[in-house]
Amino acid sequence: MTWTMIRLELARTPAFPNGSAARSYVLRLPLGADGRIDEQEYRHHPEYATVRRFWPNEPDRHGHLLRTAEGWALSYAADETPFRLEAQAIRSGSHMTLTEPGGARLPFEVKALGSI
Image (cartoon, one colour):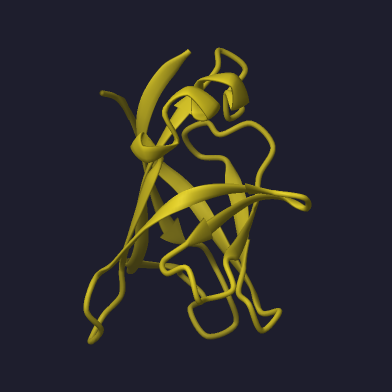
């Protein structure tokens, strides 16, 4: 298991046919050799599992990873509904989906991985 910094960038959508590097997230997660989130390590140090959102014309948002009944989620505040994180193995070039509280699904591509 390795704590890993992961940069996600918005993948192709109808509004952004070439994707958008300006719409990105940086996650710090414990990943196993299989590229999946290591739940045991997460339980030992949930405070290390963080997220930072970079979006044009909006302040950066900082939050953390949550384990919910539905799977993994990203949360920015205790009083907000978290964003669902849908991913298989997290590897450079792989894709994942973030589902916003309102149900909108946004595709992201893993652009960079780095051990901490």
